[in-house]
Length: 329
Image (cartoon, rainbow, N blue to C red; front, side, top):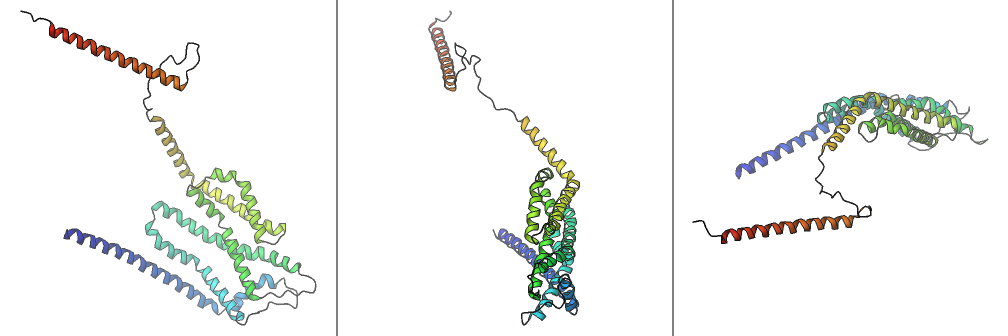
């Protein structure tokens, strides 16, 4: 008993030690992530005004002469560039942040999962950056030109820098996430939730959904809506193509497994069924009902039981005669 208790205590100590090691590793990696963001932030903060000018350039280039952006808050001239530089620091360190996360979870993954996750992480980062660049260079000039163009006569467009920053952050996130469509498509197919053929048949619904998203995220004109809807649709097609190329072997394995399961089901022996009398029709040739068939089977069983009882009686009678027969001298 003492040995069993000591073994249980040792096992519990090992489990606690393993959990503590994981927590220490997680703490170290989080500290490295925060430290990387702080280093980039400190390096960029000296250029915060220039960075904000670059971020506001799509709007400043379209504003009428004699107008400029304004700061309605007391702390806005300091907090807005501070917030922008902090956001830019996070965006620039995303590859390093994902590397730290990957280094923490990679030991618990299988080899095929590691082989699949690495290109997905790289493509996710690249597509996210492409979405931000697409929003900055393509969407912003059209978007701000539309808003400034519809301003009533006599109204000077002077945007608050805080509201402008919140607006561009929302657009950046929206387009960055929208450009993750190929990765989401690939993951759905790889996880077995759906297949390439099924998603291909849903293409009309995907196109309609892309235009709905474009309508919600862009000004109410066909050009702006199409500038977002068409890339989403093309990225969906890119996800289908990547799935056909990289998941072709997995789909073939699934088909082979389904065929094997079907053949196994076919080889299962059929359970023994009771013998059904050949004469399953009445005298008029009408098929018997279930109740009539059961009655016929019961009648046959009863006749068989009666025959067995008669045979037993004959055997008993023969044995009695043999006993009463005089023995040979």
